[in-house]
Image (cartoon, rainbow, N blue to C red; front, side):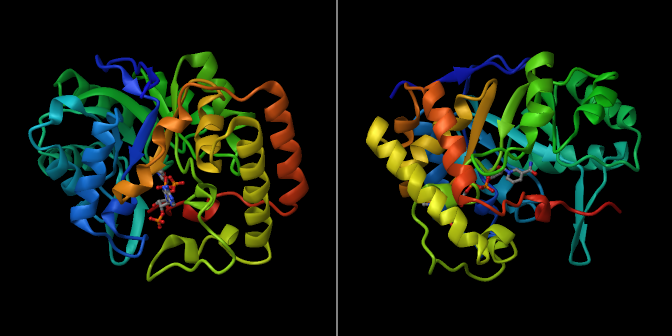
Length: 327
Ligand code: NAP
C-alpha cells in the first residue's frame, strides 16, 4: 500500500495522512466497546501503515487511552500518539477546564495510561474561555521544554482563539470537525491553517459512520450511542443524508471504481494540509483503507459533488450538538 504521509512540526516521524480515531474504543457515547477487538483494530491500523493514533482522556474516561497503551506495548516507537487535554468529568457531566493545574494533573495520567514517557501531539480539546489562552499555552510550552510532549495542537478553536494562543507558543496542528457533510471550517479555520502552516486533523471524516455507505433507514444505535442524539440521524434529515450517500456512492463507483467510504476519505485529503481521522473499533472496518490513497478527485468531481449535496441535503445541520459546556 502506498501510504501518504505529512509532517507535523516537532514530530520527527512522517505521519500517515489517515489517522485512527479511538473515541468509540473508549465505549462511552458509542454503546460500549470490546477491548480485544479494539486492540486488534489498533494493531491492524499499524500493520497497514497508519501510525497516527488519536485519542483523548475523556474517551471512556481514561479507557480509550488505556486500550491504546495496551495495544502499543512494545511498539511505541512505531506510533505517533495524539491525545488531548482540558476536559474534566464527574457528576454525570463533561466540562472544559484548561487551567495550568488541570493540565499538570492530566499529563501525568495520560502518560501512565498510554504507557509512555512522551506524547507526540498534545491538543487542547475545546477552547475554555474562562482561562486566558496564554496561560494554557504557557503550561503546554513548559511540558514541551520538559520533553513530555513534542508538538502542541488545539481542537475546536476559532482563528481568533488560535491567534491568542499562538502568541505564547508555536501551534503545529488544529483538530476541527470536517467531512463532506460538515464543512463550516472552509470559511475560516481551513484558510487560516493554510496561511499559518498548521496541519488539520479532520475529525469525523466518515460523519460518524454515515459516509461508510453501510447505513440505511432502518439502522439503529445501542445504549448511549451519540447518534441517538445526533440530529443528522433523525428523520426527515436522515433520509436526505442517506440519499446523498447513495448519490456519492454512484459517483465514486462510476468515475473511479471506488467505494463511497474511499471517496469520503479522499475528499478530505484533497482539501489541503489535512489528515483524515477515521474512527474504527473493529479490524474489518479498516478494510479498504488503501483505496483512499494514490488518486485524486478532479475539479469536475468536486463541483459535481457540491451540486449533488445541495440537491439532496436541503436541511443541513452541523455537529454542534457535541460541544461540552463550560464550567
Ligand atoms: P467517524 O470517523 O466519522 O465514524 C466512526 C464510526 O464509523 C465508527 O465508530 C463506525 O461506527 C463507523 N465505521 C467506520 N468504518 C466503517 C466501515 N468500514 N464500515 C462501516 N462503518 C464504519 O467518527 P468519529 O470516530 O467521531 O471521528 C473520528 C475520530 O475523530 C474520533 O475517533 C476521535 O479520535 C476524533 N474526534 C475528535 C473530536 C474533538 O472534539 N476533537 C470530536 C469527535 C471525534 P460503528 O462501529 O458504530 O459501526
